[in-house]
Length: 305
Image (cartoon, rainbow, N blue to C red; front, side):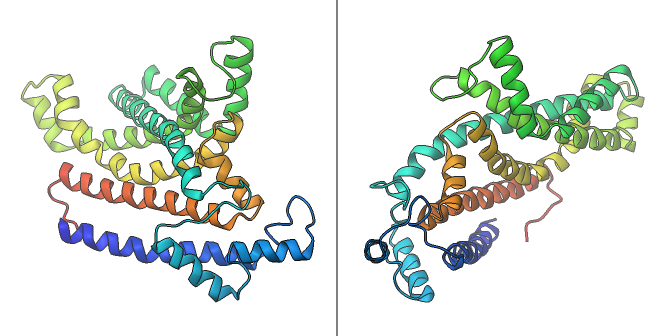
């Protein structure tokens, strides 16, 4: 296990170097200046700004300077949000994105496991058809379409929840539900398929032949094996929810990482863009490693390489 974790950390660091360097180079090699997005500046002023942010050298020199600062823990200053460092912005925005993403992930997994298991147990029954119809509806409605509908119905018509903003638990309900809905649909379909396979295994039929109760067969014997494919899907699922939250945060005006990431791309804020890429990538690698370890804990036959 320690060797596997060390190997994954080394691989993650190598990929991180490539991803961050490629992001920096793509932004710097794009036409135009990061300081001319809002209004045209005097050439002398733009030259002083380039010198202040160490963007006046050649591209390799700028990249080396950028990495030298990163290794010292300095992510730089934002080019758009004046007098604010990237670390300050990330420290304020990351907890909000993490809270929305965590709630959506728990909802997606919880609803997916319950709905998929019930659909498999009552295979071809009304409950199975209803669950799969809801799952199909969830897949056909991506978050950027579901969010305006939820605002219209629950925010404006019924006035159950606030339509935008941040500051209370009520502000969290609609964003988490809209973000979780399509992923809950995918999880329920995956769980149903896996549970059907497990319920058809010989050891399940043997347990039933011995007179074991159906609830014991499902919860004690089948669920542990059926949930393994869903566990392996949790890593990519968490990554999709985290990156998908950009649209949700923008629609519901949540001051998370999403709006800062989008603005950093539009305004070519290379330092803020690099910081958000590092955060997203680190979260993605960490979650995938945790999922690999959890997979071996649930199934002792699997060995980490």
